Structure formats: C-alpha cells, structure tokens
Image 1: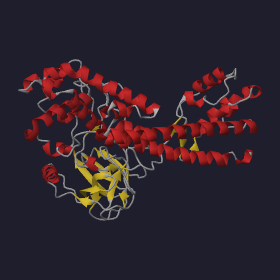
Image 2: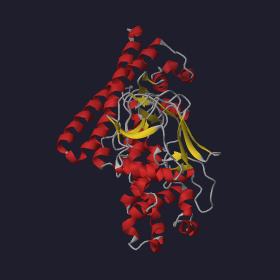
Image 3: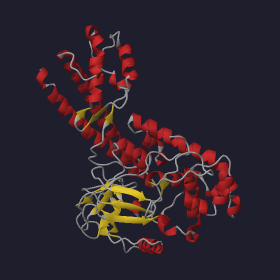
Image 4: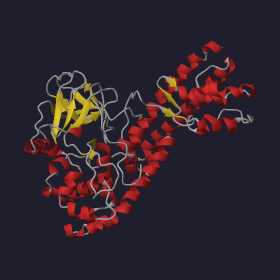
Length: 456
C-alpha cells in the first residue's frame, strides 16, 4: 500500500447477524451482519445522537429500523427496534449524508485542491477535510457526525512502541511498515497544508499536525465504505472509491454473517439489506470481510473473539527450525517452495495445520531417494508413510514451540499490565490477540496428535 493510498481496511462488503461482536477502541468488529443475544442499553436519548438524528433528517434520512445502543462486550452499536426479516432494507443512506471526494471538491478546499501540483490523492483530500472540519468546531456543517467519531483509535500506528514490540513477528513487521507509511504521508503533505494558510487565522502547522492527520487517516481507514467515483484530473490516479457514511458506520463487525451493502446508482443511496432474520432489540452487525485477527488488528484496531478466519502464521525460519541441518538438499527444497509459492501463508487454524503448511513440510522432509518426487508432493500425493509421519512430527514440534512462545508473551503482558497502568487498554488488546492464537494452537495440537495415531 503506497503512502497516500487508503489501506485495504475499507469496509465494503456484506452484512449479517449473530451473537457477540467488537469495535475499535472497545475492541470493535465490522463487515458482516448479525444479531446479538445480549440486550443493549438504548442511547438514542443522548444529546449527541439527538443532534445526529436531526442532522440526518435534514438530509432526508430517518431510520425506523435501528437505534444506537451500548452492548456488553461490543460497546456502542446499532440495535433493531423491530424484528427484521431476511432481505429487508434496513438502511438507505442518501448520498447527501456521505463524505466523499465530491464533498471535498464542492467545499472551500476545492479551489486549493484543483490548483495543487502534483494532484493530491483522494485520501489526502478526505483527511484534509476531516481535520479542517474538526478544527471548525461549532461552525462545521458536519459537527453532529464528527461528534460521534472516536477521539482515538487502536490501529497499530496509534499504539506505543513497547506494545507493538509484543506483536507476533509477521504483524510487528506490518505494523512498522504502517507507521512508516503514515509518517511519510504526513511529511509529503506538509507543503499542501501550507498552501491552505489563507483559509485559517491560525498557523496551519498547529491545525494539520501529525496527531490530527493520524486521527483523520485512521477515521478513513477504519470507517470508510466502498463507493466508486469517476476519476477527476484534480486527484492522483490512486483509487477514488471511499466514502464516510454517518450512522451506518456505527454498525459493528462480526465474521459470521452475510449482508448486502452497496451504493445504489439509481436511488443515489448507500443501501444495506439483511441476509437473515433478526429479532427485536438485538445488535445488528456487518462484516468487513474474511480477515484473520492479525489483519483485523492491523487495519481496524480490534480482535475478533472466536474468529473462524483466525490463524497463526509460520515463517520460513520457524518452518525449518526442527529439520536436520545435515540435509544437503535443504536449500534446493526451499528454492522449490519459493518458486511454487509455498513459503508464505503457511498457518495453523482451528482445524489444525493448513494443507499448505503440511505440503511444505512433506516436501522438506523428503529423503534423498525420494527427492525426485517433489512435484507429486505439491500435487497432494502421498510419497511414503515415513514422509507422512515425519512431517506430522515436525508440525507438532512447531506447534508446541508456538504454544510455549505464546505462553511466555502472555506472562510478559500480565507483568506489564501490573507495571504500566497507562497502557492497560493497549496491553489488553494485544493480550486478546495472543489468547486467541493460543486457543488455535491448542486445538491444532490435539488435531495433530490424532493425525499421528495411525503411525504409532
């Protein structure tokens, strides 16, 4: 993801219903659509939601199906006011309610964007608009929406370095890349911000600070939905497919639901329909896609409990950790795995080691006289009982290594929770990630044990 582009965390897809959920600063979830058994506490009486409702009504949107509520475990979300049937339209948000690059171009920022060279990215336009409108305070036409946005986020780029250091290695590397991208995004945008000085009485450096831009970047990254726009010459060629959708973005994520959500070109509304029935006074969810927990934490800042897509990644160094160092064909085997795309996305899941992981291990465990059969291994053929057994033993050792590592990290986090009180929320988030991975590894260990039974 190049600096200045919106990361892959945009909420685009389905909606559905189920039990449980989560959210950004409250370990949030989103993108399918389900119902929760837990009864929520109605929050529609709160001043910020009264103002939001009036604001939406002025823009021709009035919701009769859902109300804001606070749920145990998931925090703020949307609750069904009545029973919802499969296929029912539950939200039809007019285009006038959306914040898009069209909104920005029509605003006071439009002329500045149009004359800036090289053309700014759609992401920069949206972030600039958010920072400017937030700075405007009571004068902003978007104040009722801005008032309900989180003031802080839990994406890795917002976490303290000592917390990021506790991440699993693959996630830690991606988190460091994310931080570098956002910092570069800020640095490369400062000249554009300076060009906006005529719009403000205060110095633009104090308005468009790194902290302010980070907030706006996280807002777009974690809350935007997919709405395709025609390419404008005043913007760079990066995708212009994102929109902030007030009220709709209160929906939390669940990985186990299916709902249809898209922008309707005919009605000019962003529409959401249920894919299953939902009972009265239950939380309604959407789904951000079939992401594992490391991806959810990276892009959205939350971990999904019992996520069916959750997994534990096996890196190359761990893959070969328990293989004999005397194998003269090891380098050639690794080269074959790389050439055939079998060195990445090797995982343990709820149903045990992935087929890709076992296949890679089977190839690495080939005896010298079996090496010529490596193509058959990649096609899923059984070479020998010895090869099958050895690969399962190695998989078990790797799994046990991860279990021990995970327990060690969880002990470290527990100690830090006692010592670093100010980091408690951030540490709890990382603790949840490792706890979920531990459950997966324990399930995989049991499955591996049963797979080895025929060879004993």
